[in-house]
Amino acid sequence: MAAPERTRVAVVGGGPAGMFLGLLLARGGIDTVVLEKHPNFLRDFRGDTVHASTLGLLDELGLGSAFAALPQRRVDSVEIQLDAGTVRLADFGRALPGLHPYVAFVPQWDFLEMLADAAEHEPHFTLVRSAEVVGLTRDGGRVAGVRWRDYAVAEPAAVEPAVAELAGVKRSAAEPEPAEHVLAADLVVACDGRWSTVREAAALVPREFGSPVDIWWFRLPRHEGDPDGGVGRLSGHEFMIMIDRGDTWQCGYLLAKGADAALRGEGLDAFRAKLARLQPWLADRLDTWPKTLDDVKLLDIRVERLEEWHRDGLLLIGDAAHPMSPVGGVGINLAIQDAVAAAQLVGQWMRHHPGPVPADVLSGVRRRRLRPTALVQAFQRAAARGVVSRALKGQVATSRTAVPLPLRVLTRFPILQSIPARFIAIGPRPEHTPSWARRLERMAPR
Image 1 (cartoon, one colour):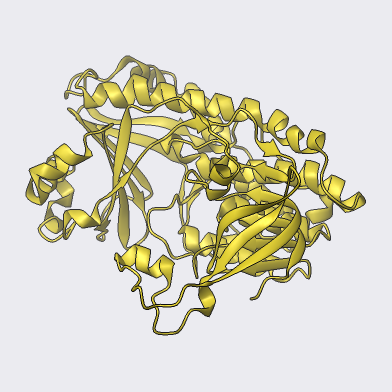
Image 2: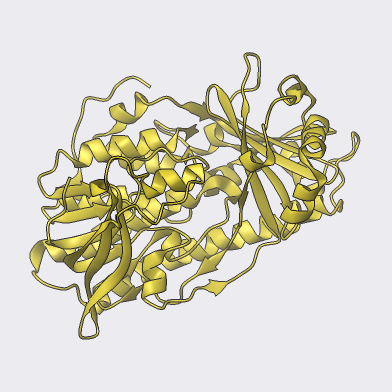
């Protein structure tokens, strides 16, 4: 769909935060354009966790039944497999009364298409795919819109940049450059992730907190009889998480920050041997998976946060404002909470006032979301340094007779498992959708 030349809100990035915000604002009667640089949502290595806080928001929007129809795995607890046995870390059933005492694992492309379908029924919503934002426009000192390239109008023989990026194909010099456009807006909202183009264009530099670990992200086939849901495995110096995607496992192998080149230098067979030692029941599929180390992607973990989340005419939320660690899988849900808070504050103002949004309204989003963001990042940093990093250095006992003290406490006093469960699944400050964005539906059985 072609974008108009002007809109009230230009949302950069069609991820969970961007699509959620676009849907909410459109339901408030605010003209909103979401610019998504890829032609579709089919990208690997995206987070799949949808937590109880987000499930409640979907119910408020009348999308509970649509979500329930998506392919998914529901997990009512989090466990970690040690050499000494399996230890439960969090019990969602104990901590979360109501309709959603679980975390759902859902392919993110299905989740985003569901949001896109709901939003495209709103007359004030426009989603433009294959639209890569490359810069900002300004009116004096105020951000007044975005410059974007339209890859959808490239010649059919040309390889679209999103597809080329995934396939490793470079554009030929003979291929035409995509058309460039300007979209004027009263407000630009950056939802374009940890490598935000908008943040860079606005010359905003986040504070870095550092991370002692990175992750190798890859897939393995899932066979009948494998465990369900999510699996964590810690043994010796090795730590891996596995997310059940139905016919495949999405796997994350943790490594010390900066160790990528050295591990790749050991070769594919050495990596397969590590996986076989860590999870022996995977041995029947490791002769052919991963096919090459090119199938193993490095996720450079960053924990950062902007001191300010806005400029005149510009708001940043989600990973564009505060890149998160994947610890706990809470980044998606925290970004969605940001989007809901933005709709509550900024959307409410725009529904009753024309023109640009005042600075005090934009800064209110940061004031509202800073404390929960800082708490979650502090939790992630503590977990990474206190458990994961120590485990990779062999400083956490994982023998068949030794269980680390914090895990022994959780095992002896199961009621304590509700604390991490609620922190992960709900978060320190859950948001609720504005009344003007809600819809009623006949709830399907769950």
